[in-house]
Amino acid sequence: MTKKRKVIAVTGARSEYDLLYSVYKNLEEDENFDFSIIITGPHLSHTFGYTAKHIEEDGFKIAGKLYNFIDTGEKIGRITSIGNQVTLLANLLNHENPDIVLVAGDREEAISVTMTCAYLDIVVAHFFGGDIVKDGNIDNSARYASSKFAHIHFPSLPEHRETLMKLGEDDFRIFVMGNPALDRIASTRFLSKSEVLSNLGVKNKKISNYCVLIQHPTAQALKQDEQIRSTLNALLEYEGHSFINFPNSDSGSAEIIKAYQEYSSKYPDKLTVFKNLDRENYLSLLKHSEFLIGNSSSGVIEVATLGLAAINVGERQRGRVHGANVIFTDNNKDQIQKAIYRVLNDEEFRQIVARKENPYGSGNSAEIVVKVLSEIELSQELIYKNITY
Image (tube, rainbow, N blue to C red; front, side, top):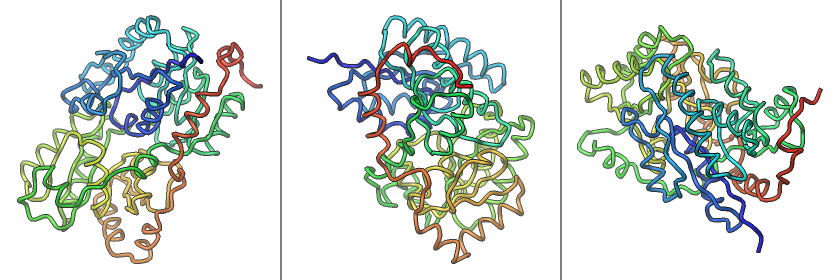
């Protein structure tokens, strides 16, 4: 009998967990793997909705919970959290001794996991490397550094593969996969509009049309309050309702949350705030909305597949490959209002959005990943890296 490959995924935030859910599910169901998940970071913070509960409800085997996150809202809290995480990860991974570790993206977990595994000679697969975002955010440096520590790469696009090659990564390590988020959209059971509104606790409000706002902090740390108020003030003049999702845990999130609470308290008939939704309710909420606004990667990667327009406000996500459904604006009320008007009234643009053309794939990413993880040779050549030039 062939020995199962022991694979552990590390997840710290709702965003990357949702993106890789289909990969996790396929690994769990494949008899060739012993699969489990380490939960850490803001997943375990009640400030950000304790999203670990969604992983527990999904029924995955939990290899451990690492409480590293320091919720200060300051930059020093983020780097201190990384330091805490490295020590906790090193001890748990040394004990678990997995064959392969999985981690995604460009946040704290990406850099701490890839670095820890590199030093422990544990094969680590990194997802979404090679992406280029010209917004000045520290996440870009974390993404590139993670790629240099990682042994296997699963970029979304051929363009991202070329970036990894320019970083000196071996061609044999790189497997273009599309984006697994689209796998899950294809398999989601969408709720009706009335079901979603009922689940959000607003079934008694007269809401016919609405949008969804997700706006995260930017590299301009001292302007979070000013920037989010530009968006909120524009939305107050939008005729529909606005459902607002909490930001991520980056420095500056406290200012954004404070503004959300202030505006939603003052304008309860226009704005509804929630911390987190499970994937089914989140995608269903988006599906029935008129547009997504803010600066979430969902606007760039996922919602084109739903036939939904996205208004990306500010610098975050600039420079990324995106569909024709995305409109970019500055943090400027007038520009945002013009973008909203275009989304609702420009028939040519609306027809383009309705085509649902998405550069990130068609929904078979998990199959590609599982095949690679089952067949790739876990050799010294894979672990001991050299730059290719």
